[in-house]
Length: 158
Length: 239
Image 1: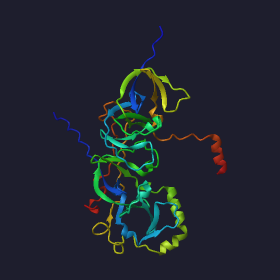
Image 2 (image 1 turned 180 degrees about the vertical axis):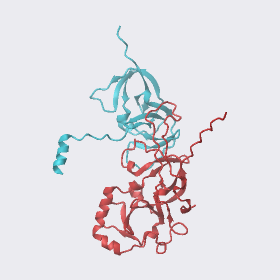
Image 3 (image 1 turned 90 degrees about the vertical axis):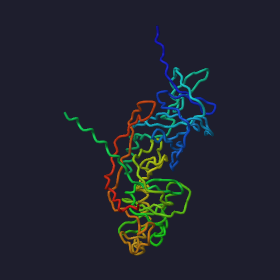
Image 4 (image 1 turned 180 degrees about the horizontal axis):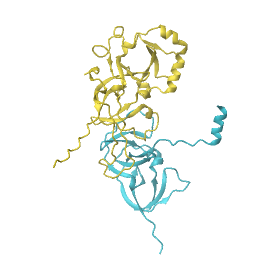
């Protein structure tokens, strides 16, 4: 008897007419929209911040990247964990409809998929992208290792 | 048998800040970082125009003793709508004099949260972090973030041919020269903080793991180090 593949838990979120999935372990809570505080910055993916449980949480509107347009209205903020090299922080993702917790088996992404797709799952006849929040939301750009040839050229010029 | 005395609760550590507006937007700065607050009118005679600075946000320089302070337009620095500034902050341990709309109030903050890492561009140099004051989120500016070393180099370079002119020209804004300086925005002269020690509240950072989904307080902030209560001389601050 062959072992059954393990199914995992995902939260389905809605952006306009499309649905996407995020690993349930990355979700903290679903909250009603609250006041967004805005201040000057140059990270265009960040809309502002909200105050949640004493913490200041950036609001990242991922709709433009996922469905090609910004959201006109939002029903909830999905508070998710975003992993960085130095730790984990909360981010708020605006969504337009109810979210749903499901169990499904994820098919890992292939090389042809976009970086923000960590896999695919099938649910009620739909094929749904599982989002990789680390690739989808902004964060510090990892330093690129210097290619030895470039390093040599730098030395030669100096 | 004597019971051990209960451990003393750690005193709440606070940092005094000034809430100010630039083009209507609210910001905060540590009061210990502000050496002086002046009316822009008082700079009129002391500031020299920089002909070709290459920086739109800096148009003037003020010579004070051996040091030159560059007058940074706060609205241009933050990319906000231009607004006629009324006050200027002379920032301690920098060469920046910051043009602002006005002061909202002075208050204290008890917690400074690191700027979320989702903010990953210039703003990381602009802000020490963010704090919540009266249920409003306010960014706390980094005094040294208004002019980068490259920008200072550029400005210094643009001044070099004019050094002699500046040194022989207006220098009415001499440090401690209260007689020649025009009256300032605060009664009795300029607001001058006498404490050279920077009060420093370490930025609260979060533990790397999130332990629960309820999120009431799963991310314990690490201990913050605050200035000693007397690190800023209260007598030097406007009440």
